[in-house]
Length: 213
Image 1 (tube, rainbow, N blue to C red):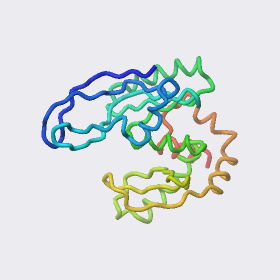
Image 2: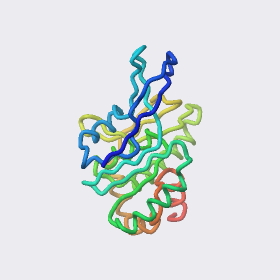
Image 3: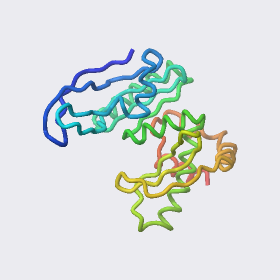
Image 4: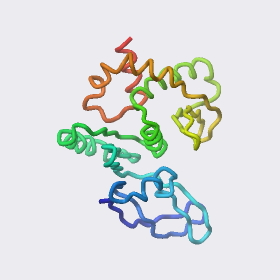
């Protein structure tokens, strides 16, 4: 069951204080309406009753998509990191066929969901992103790109978004043929490199690429 609590929020625009529903855990099988709300951000969007200003709130929560055996813990504050690692390690023993992840931001969380919705393996996507990152740093260092995110538009087309200081500055098409090549080449070793690992990100991909040569 999804769990929530009320928290006092201070409007970043006018400073007024109001109660807001904060989700501690979200279960999309038991509360299917939340599946879309987390993807659009509506589940985390605060609208001030006084001035109408809106803000997307970042906080820790557990997302559980039971129908796809998928679980993600969003740890933006970092204080629950070690605790969640222990919890997921214990749950993995009881749910060995589950995919379990830990991410550090709402953007990373939303990216994981887009990869899931596209039917892709986030480990392969991160390996491809590792190569893209190296190219960006060598060729476009002056652009200040600090985030590369997998995305999918309303037509189901996949791509990478290049962001700098929370603003999108460029994009590129996702090469599905390259995805298939990388997946076929790495598939036999992916489970080995990700066993017991819940943070599948650039650092993980860089390490895997380095070890695989």
